[in-house]
Length: 130
Image (tube, rainbow, N blue to C red; front, side):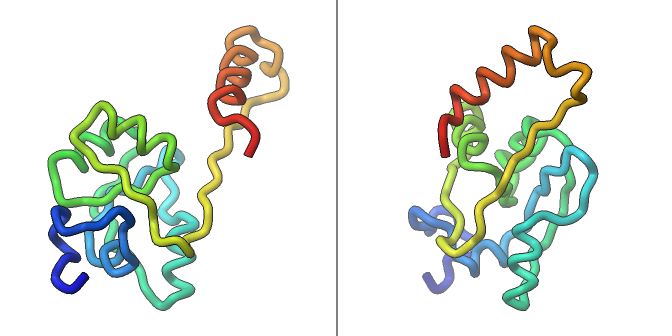
């Protein structure tokens, strides 16, 4: 909607491409990378986003966003979890933004450690078949 780009109270139930481009972002980058699939998508459309803060932690990123006008793009399950604990609103991205894939990796030597087996089973249970 016209004039709503910078005013979160005017947002509908899905963020628009214009809002995604106009608002500053906190970029969650646990490995210190500087680009995500969202950036490649926006570049393909001839756009970009302003990343003003890099964070290696979901919790610190949520804290920053909860006290600012910044956006934080995350997998929906993570965003919903953070929105339950911080004063945040979780909104879906524009429908044509490609899916985000979150990978979990470990060294094969540790694959059978009980704690890792438990964690992998828990993640499978929470995510379920996709």
